[in-house]
Length: 115
Image 1 (tube, one colour):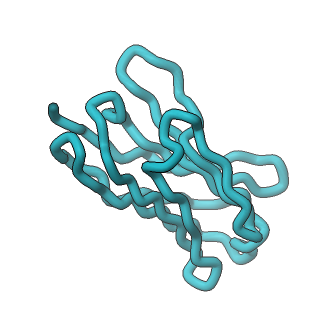
Image 2: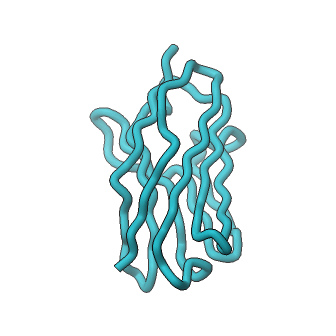
């Protein structure tokens, strides 16, 4: 069982920045695929960014150039630096850890961007 906890959401004005963090309780964190997903009002959950244990990253087109995903394998943490936030980035953001093909989700953290 992997326990995943997000933190760092909040309210910010358009153009501002926020940093989300995710901590995962797993002994082999460096082998875990980590990702950020979001669910906007009335929309399905979607991938924002992902990062492999070796640091390979993937981003949704809508956030490329604005968001940066990173991880610290020594601390079992992952982060999402969000710059240039837009009102359409408003969503509940989830951290996901994938270990041995099993997905573990956090409870989500709300990001609200005001115009």
